[in-house]
Length: 234
Image (cartoon, rainbow, N blue to C red):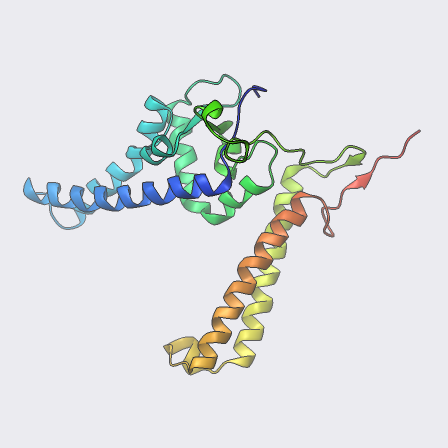
């Protein structure tokens, strides 16, 4: 990694994602209309529109160094090894992984050393600020010390597996408790009273917070199955 690179804060990346989401929605509808105007209708028009969506961001990222949202927010996607734009294949894989994993991938920005999401780390890309000299320090971040000296951390794959295991257990626990406390009419048909809706919202919020905590604690090696070990001095 280049020591001169600065990384955008989490909120900046969320803003770029929201901008790209709006653009993709408009592009999808425009593609359907355009396909219909040239006689492509039904399932074929959706195939064309989806194909355009799948190519849109990878092309922008590989050719220009970022999506429309990235450029508007002042960010750039580069290879962590060369500092150049990533190639189309890497950009395509990055985009697909981002869609599939969603928030689970993005939350890693908060805990990884170079502020990378899973879709960044997988293709060895990193998001950097274009002109850090024009921004305050809180907008152009340095790399963080994610692993403390003096400890031996389990491999990333082990921590990743334990994140999945703990999250599955969490879903089962919350699902069981919710099923015991709320009637079937509310859970299945949506016929909930005001207090039942409040309870559902509370459980959903609990699930989100607990999921984020699991990811952070597993990454830091603090949970059973992926605990860090203190290095004994010889």
